[in-house]
Image (tube, rainbow, N blue to C red):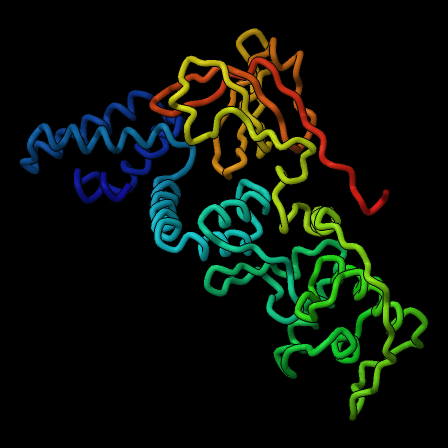
Amino acid sequence: IKICHHFAGLDLADADVLRRAMSGKYRSKSEFQRIVDKFFSNCRAFGYPEEITKEVWRQIESFAGYSFSKAHSASYAVESFQSLYLKTYFPMEFMVAVINNFGGFYRTWVYVNEARRWGARILPPCVNEGEYKTSIRGKDIYLGLVHVMHLEAETAMRIVEERRLNGKYASLADFVSRVHIGLEQLVILIRIHAFRFTGKPKKELLWEAHMLLGDAPARTSERALFATPVRSFSLPPLEQDPLEDAYDEMELLGFPVSMTHFDLLETSFRGEVMARDLICHKGKTVRMLVNLVTIKNVKTVKGEWMHFGCFLDAQGNFFDTVHFPPSLKKYPFRGDGIYLLKGKVVEEFGYPSLEVEKMAKLPFRKDPRYE
């Protein structure tokens, strides 16, 4: 509207008719053509070169292809460039901001993977070093307490606030004496390794938690004037399998932190080709081991379903796949997880993808917590 008004001298009413017509809301085609003719005649009267007038009109006309306003599209363009700048020069900080925005197209673990790919060290929530939301210190990213499933928001915020007011927690017993928390919530924090500052194994901390709260009477929010001595105890060495930590993380965060999804596999095979080398194998059939990110479903002209897949390889790099109806019927997707793909490498506009011929979801190692 402003361009038509200021550049071509159309009054605001005519400019608005032009805008509506370009979005498909014609009053009449003859009226639309009248305003177009007026646009060009005014420009000639103002002495604009014909080439400039046609170029300005072309740019105005191009917005007819958008289903939302120019202001909307322009704002997204600005946001895209800002995001590109931030991701280029502050990649880890940018990913932390995206995680804390609790939005975006992908799930949290995908953004965590991207931060790791840029050199970040991803750490589970910690009652002493972490915050309610995800935070970053140097290259260390502490996942926020907000991401811990089944941990009450009020409890998470109280943990951070108590530490802010009275300093870091000295031990599990000190934490229990300062934070009004039940045994169930405390166990969740121990299982997610939020007390690793104590240097004690999780299983020992679980025993200590039951000693502190297992048969304790109802507690008040009032703090004791002096620290109360805690009954000491000794335990025999307790075995701790790193795989148990990974499964605790998957249960409570939705994804592993101490290892990758690929480390959970029974096989050590990681594929014949990595995503970054895919273009070098154009026209060849390859096997790839990949983690499913997302799927897009579309129908062919014959009304059959086909899929476009987005995957990550073991190095954390993205690539796309195409699943035509015949292969999709034989080898359907079976939920999130790691897949072994076999297909032909194709290239379009300089970007490689895989036309999948066969696909199988691979099993993880057994959960040792229940053996």
